[in-house]
Length: 291
Length: 289
Image (cartoon, rainbow over all chains, first blue to last red; front, side, top):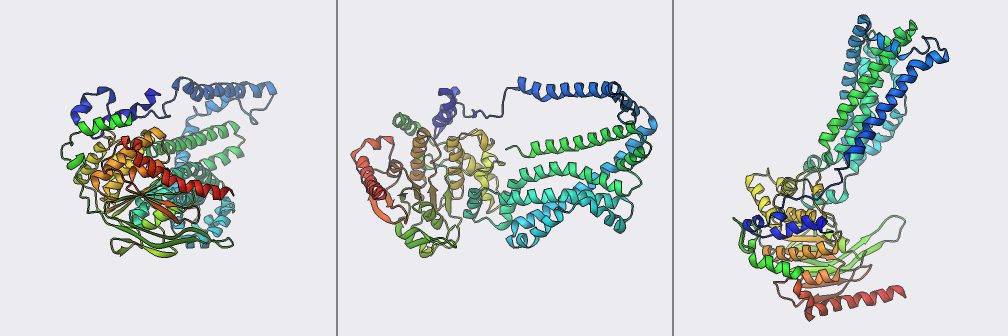
């Protein structure tokens, strides 16, 4: 009880007091802060966060290595883990994974960029104007219920076999989560804070810059986190439909050759790209949204 | 306990460097203005529902530099009244004035403090205080210095660069007071500002608020449902009836301008509280019939 009251007590003493008085009371230094809940016991926490997934990884790896042999599965159905891992030693495959991976990564990032910019802009527009929202939103929902891959053939007709159709498929997939999250982030702004800004006669522009956009930031970044995964999905799907290079094309070639170990190796690279992109966004989010 | 502590602070406190009289930081506080409500009626009508009369024929004159408290049970239109004074809500009929000017939209010289501190979590304590200035012009070193002095005066020196979530509820509400004062208000509107605080912190905040008012001389209207708080802080208490909100009584508080918590033991304080309370006792018995 006494301890929890200390910060308040410290404040009391220094309120309206001279600097000398504050100095003479070192126990009530005003730099004391109320302990927040963020500092939690880290010992058991790290065991659960790192230890348990690591254990599961070992178990799955062991099963993958020995189960196919025990069950008598053929290598082209489910190759043991060691077969998959040796794939990475082959210089030709490593080279193919590298060059195709870069292509897929480029499509993903460009699609993510395009989809996010358009999604955030339209989200802001819909958040701002109830009229535009009423007019446009039903069509956006209709568009969202359309399977985006089905648009890929159209994009190919329009833009050929290059980079553009894949970027567009990735962008159409990322666009919607960002739009919805931006819009809802803007619209669910704290009512008292909105009232505060109005009471201070803030202009529309000031309300956007100093209240709505910062308020929407957590929600926008959550949408962005989801969108990174979807952008990668969109890029690979676009490559399936028509392409000369990219990990999706590599997968199809490996499939034709019944190179199952190669397929797994490519999948691992895709998973690696997906996890890395996602983690980058998670870290950005933690840096920007510290409240 | 509060009385003793408060006295010791008051007697020993020398003004911090650069502070004005009474230890209050030198803000360019404009002269206080009067606040007037003339026959304000506020009806909320929603389609398909019977209209709700939140306020009925409310008239009040608040003199420049006066501290008036409005008490009433929940749902008597207190907050609606405050929003009307703040220019946030338009009355169905009647008008409100600052000085001689009718209030039709929010004004920069009317500062509002809400029940929650409503600080912006992404800004530092200092950044929150600077908000009203930033809405007018780019905040410069003078503004920052004024905010620092105000924070120090409110007992928050050393917290300027903290984030709001690192502060206790009482400290957050102090920051909100500082932010309101940074707008250099002629009129301060308070909507149950300490309602969410525990009783001990609340008493201390009341003493502080009274001190702020005495030092700044700003015209202040406080909305509350706490009778003792209303009487302790104000020079007049307006008693509102439950819905529709009508003025039942206006109680003058015959207490000295310089108050600390010792006044709660005086007969004047007890009498004023009793008179305010008598209205609610009667209203409550009506309600139960």
